[in-house]
Amino acid sequence: MAKPVIAIVGRPNVGKSTIFNRLIGDRLAIVEDKPGITRDRLYGTGEWLNQSFNVIDTGGIEIDGEDEILKSVRVQAELAIEEADVIVFMVDGKVGITPADEEIGQLLFRSHKPVVLAVNKIDNIKMQENIYEFYSLGFGDPIAVSGAHGIGIGDLLDAAAQHFPEDQEDPYGEDVIKVALIGRPNVGKSSLVNAILGEDRVIVSPVAGTTRDAIDTPFERDGQQYVLIDTAGMRKRGKVYETTEKYSVMRALKAIERADVVLVVINGEEGIIDQDKHIAGYAHEAGKAALFVVNKWDVVEKDDKTMNQFTQNIRDHFLFMSYAPVTFVSAKTKQRLHKLLPVVTEVAEHHSMRVPTHVLNDVVSDAVAVTPPPTDKGRRLRVNYATQVAVKPPTIVFFVNDPELMHFSYLRYLENKIRASFNFEGTPLRLFTRRKS
Ligand code: GDP
Ligand code: GDP
Image: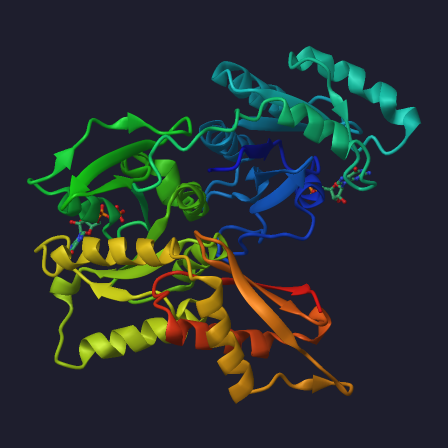
């Protein structure tokens, strides 16, 4: 299920990115470098009392051509209101209230979203009294924090966590395949959705999704039930999303979290750019089944080699996702489109496939016999047995004499052997090593 989202909003220099870094620690989900957006860090994952959450630093957004502070904080606030479950409104306890703070405060107030007011730069006890003037912003008790010294972060998270939505049950059955289409603007996601649904669709009435703003589209084809995740959200995406691609990334991340299968849509006419990689990388990290959908194949000039060349190009760019099949379609002419859902169904099956322990162990012991683990300072890794402990994605634990002796390259070798024996096409595998002699 999608994680709760905290957005940090405030005028420049109050310390948003400092606090952001405190909240996410080192775990950075997305690093992007795009001209016009000056910061790398925008979106990360943090954890508080065993609950993980996503946090957005809206200060990372600078709209191209909009350098007026008020204008850009307004856009930031709007985005936060749109995306967040709870907003951390950050002000500067050394400077006091400014007109920009008041402006943001009014926007947030009108949104009726939960707001936690954080007064930053309260670096010591003496400064504590600086927080009182901020009561006048009307958001209740201000929370004193110091990003520089790491003070008050726990209090801030306690206050924010009170507004996290209740854990929602998956509203669909286990057998329903949840599909998200992701990709840059204009690759043809909406067109594909419409083309997939087609005229012969059997649409169960649209259901409000589990997150506030997601509208899912369930449908059935050849006896299999599917849900297209958050496609309406993608369609309604407005001008702001067009100008700030990072926010379309963010919307995509939410959809990915709720999906079983992610369709990474690529514009066949334009080829691959870095942004495609970032989004696909998130699907991989989130452990989702994935396939590449090269759209607009109708306009590509092709001969008998083009498809292989394009596939190779994808393989070169997405080394970490060699398991994901590549399909070529046209939403416009519906060329090859009928092949898509069968592939989706297949990778979904692989994503939830369970391999019996004895069969898995036969494969692993054969692999170890063929290529024994390398030694490290005279000690050799011993793989005692392996077992699959989870599905979606398939997760395998290797019990070994000493996990320190397991090298990345050997784990990769074992993964290849496992993939050669079982059809896990379309799904990442998670491999862990545990001590047990
Ligand atoms: P943003 O523009 O709101 O993201 O602000 P930054 O995080 O970039 O911080 C702006 C400036 O305030 C930087 O020079 C920080 O070092 C400083 N700063 C951030 N947090 C604190 C704090 O808790 N105490 C003090 N004294 N300075 C801070
Ligand atoms: P989205 O932003 O990813 O949802 O992209 P859209 O579905 O809005 O499509 C962007 C543009 O590409 C529109 O003008 C579509 O008509 C066009 N388009 C989408 N799919 C195809 C396709 O398969 N072939 C061609 N030639 N154009 C397409």
